Length: 368
Image (cartoon, rainbow, N blue to C red; front, side):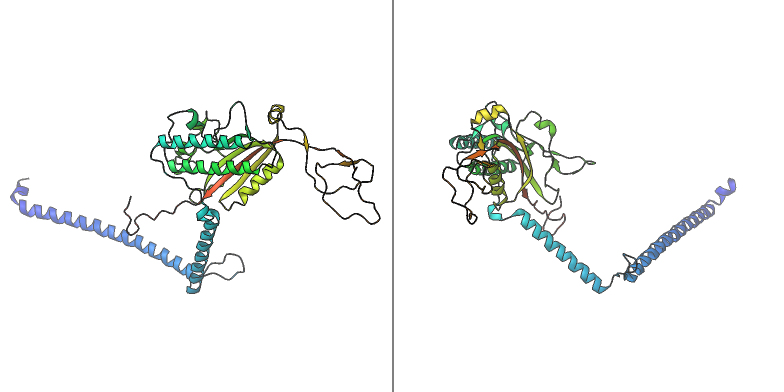
């Protein structure tokens, strides 16, 4: 120890040289390891590049497809065609922009609630003036029961979407009322909608994570709100607002209503149609006497002889067979099939294309 202290500077110099030597060894090893890793990555990249240039056979016996200039141009052309096809599909789904149904943003929930109550009263008056009836026990609130019977209820978000639903229901109700043939009975049981103002963010790990979906708990006690089992919405591609129209009437009313919706030029899609029988109470409410189904064609008759007919309308004129006498004015028919009232449930989706948001970090756009 005495000698170490006597030659302290020399000994410290030796220790420093040893530490520097060890550090050099460590750095040399790390550099060598890094070089090996870089070399392996380079070899892998070279192998991949050679494989791409050599080409790949997608099926036995087919010529390999390689990454050459011609194939790159062909791939770029295919991408351009796909983009054009996608834009065409978007245009077909969205329909004519001038016929789109858009809601307006309300200043507050009180204004929106008042507008919804006013619309519901107007639809009820329209139906009553046209002789359309409602269920006596619980008349429909046209999808806005929470706003009519629960004063102070306000949507959690997106007032404009709720107002858009109001305008769509207005269109559907008017089309249904106009679809009823003159004198034909019609009872509106309910018009239901998706309660989009109660949608919640779907957590990670579930289908549609990151998007908004229905909250079953929020609509449990609402009679005119529903979560559609079948819908045409696809997150990020197509948005859909679903509605369910339930009414009682005859088949011509349903047929006219569906055709009006399909041929409206608006982005509507009829997703489901359910048909059922009515109850005696409903038939009594409508007070419609038994009538018969419309004629599908002529039935031959012989003068003075009663004939059976499955139809309730006179047959269309047709040429009589040669040698037969004219049909007598006293021809009698016996109807054997009666036209019955039916309950119809029609689900309708209103489609729209989600707005494309600019990519994060794009020029002129601040990062969020």
